[in-house]
Length: 483
Image 1 (cartoon, helix red, strand yellow):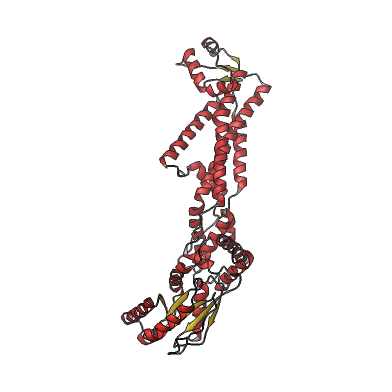
Image 2 (cartoon, helix red, strand yellow):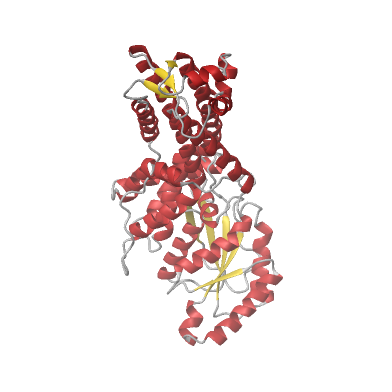
């Protein structure tokens, strides 16, 4: 999943899961988003394409009502100009920082380049140690990387929801922040690393350009001074330190006599030393940093195009049931009882949610007791729901036969669901949990004998959230495979 799509999906999911009461983002809105996305991408599209398109459409509609969620999504998107600004600032700092000296002399034991080389060698050592310690996994981001991420991608002014706040948007924003950090943290850390590598190379390049620019206008003299070191030791030290420059330029470090002659107040023209410094900086800092930036950039690009979105989670599995050009036909067949209009409305809403919102629910005439042998056959792509009343005592000869007949018409891509309405029995028994559970056990045994699992719901006073979760759990094994 690419970066923008993954962020939009996380945002819409956060709102849909926070708005359980469907006050801000209604069932009709959700159904429209699924239906419109399916029509655009086609029912044979990859699941990821459908989910991404649906999130884009949903955010467009949400933005017409409230800009809080779309604005937060925009705030979380990475701002590329921040990386460019950091690199430019590093280059400018390098140009300005290389003030070689007011007396136009270079102390070959302590030039600004020495600090850059030592610092970068320390960084390479830390990177290598971190890679070994974490066995190839990404090390936790340090303060510099965290600072870059904060500048380039922030969540804006997200407020925590107040106690009793009915508005689902603040809860959705908090959930989005939590989810997106988990999803994008490895990508953002890699991106910050690339920027810091480029900034280090730009800083070194700025130092070189500043040094040569000043060398054109002024004559610089190379010298050294030390309280404790003699010329022989200084030559050995310089030979080691400038070894990369010597290898690249072919210019050898002067002998001990020449080094001794350079000791302050003595000096020599600094041109050859500047070339050694520049070559050393090029080999130790600029080229390795550019190679590291290239490597991290390739890895960053790979991660940005493949952010992990687990489409096998119940939320996405439910949405993918709506990946059809036309509404999914759902046929509800009540047996030996007729649900009242309120129960029918609850049933329609629940089944529409289960199918991802893109559903056409049909309630057939009640199948009379004893007429179960030949129920109406369903078209191949129709989901069939057997609806019973918990008030009835399940019988294998009647209720079981009805399930057997329905199973004979069910297909592999059109599951048979068994719903048991508790409203009638609850009206008689009240909250007698013991007797309710005893009756449920009888229905579970009957359905088990006929290859089904019943879902119990009070269609008059439903807990739709709980029913939706149970229905998701029952339907997930029957859902289409994810491509």
